[in-house]
Structure formats: C-alpha cells, structure tokens
Image (cartoon, one colour):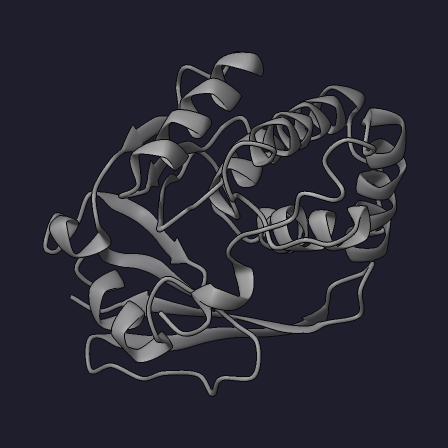
Amino acid sequence: MANRNLESYHCRAMTANTRAEQLEPLVERAALAITGAALEPGVRGDLVTWLERLLEWNSRMDLTAARSPEELIDLMVADAIRLAANIPASARVVDVGTGAGAPGLALALLRKDLHVTLVEPLGKRAAFLRTALGTVRRADVTIERARGEALEGRREWDVALSRATLEPAAWLALGVTLAVPGGSVWALLAKDPAPAHPQARLEEDLAYTWPLTGAARRAVRFSVLS
C-alpha cells in the first residue's frame, strides 16, 4: 500500500482552470510519444471527458495526486496507452484497486473490444466511476465494489492488472488466482524489482518513460501456469 500514497489523491489547484482545450493536446502528445500514432478522435474525446469529470469531482473529494495537467495525463492515461497494444483482442480484463480509473478505465476507452471489470472498495470512488462511465456511455464496463482480496480464487479473467494497490509480490500472488491458466498478470512498477511466484512465468518486461513528466516506468507481464 506504500506506493498508493504516491498516486492517491489530492489536487485542487488544477481543478478550476483545466479544461478540454488544455487536456486534449496533452493526451494526443502522450499517445504520439508512446505509440507513434494518433488516437482516433472519438477515443481521445472519451478520455478527455473522463478526465474533465475527474477534475470536477476532485473539487469535492480526493481523486488524483496530479499537480498539473501533464501529471494528470501521465498518472491516469500513460500506462494504459503503453499496455493497450499488448492486451489480446476481446480479452476479459480486471483492474484491482482502480481508484479513479487508472489504468483500467483508460484501457476500456482505448480498446472498446475489451471486457473490463474495475474493482474499487471505496464507495465514493465507485460512484465517480459509475458517473464517468455513464458520461462516456460505457455501460458494458463492470464495477465491483470490493477489495481485491475478496476476489481471490475466482479465475474469471484473461488479464489481471493493478497499479500501486499492493506490493508487487503480494499483487502477483493475488493476480495468479484471478487470471485463468494461460492468462496474464501485469505488474506496473516504478523502482521495484520484478516479483516472482511459482505459478507465474515472466514473459515480458517493458521499460518506458511517462512522456510528459519523464518518470521511469516498467510493466512486467507474467503468464499464469496451470
């Protein structure tokens, strides 16, 4: 839970002054830096709409630690942009401890073919997620108000991912009980070493940089053994 404090959640100064005309070019700049390709206008618009709702709600409750629009885009969107091309078509994806929707909600907006479940224990954050999904008309995305540990053993998803909810080793131990055999568990890391687990095999280790703030990131994918 220690890393959670770095990515949760207070930024009020930005809320009143940040609007779509500021966010949209930054979202596009991030996508170009990470993938080399522009986002479809509808996808970009949905991401910006979600971020605008986030900032509106942030005036009443803590949803993001970002102190600038650039930090907001990197915290909420950059990891999902990097992962989007690495998720199989039509995969069932679970994001444990999604908070305000990073990275799971962003992935759902980037990849409309995915079947995404957002897991968040706090009622106010879950209410925000429902509002945001309603605004972008994504009733297909599931919200489960629960702690990740409550899902242990369900093995319903092709891909399990989480960012800063648990320490990496604890997350991998939980993730291998959520993904089906042959499925994937992603661990999103900053400076932590990659974890290990007897039921998981390391398959991908992606080092990258958040494009607008320069923070070093790492996404590690494990396949779940039978």
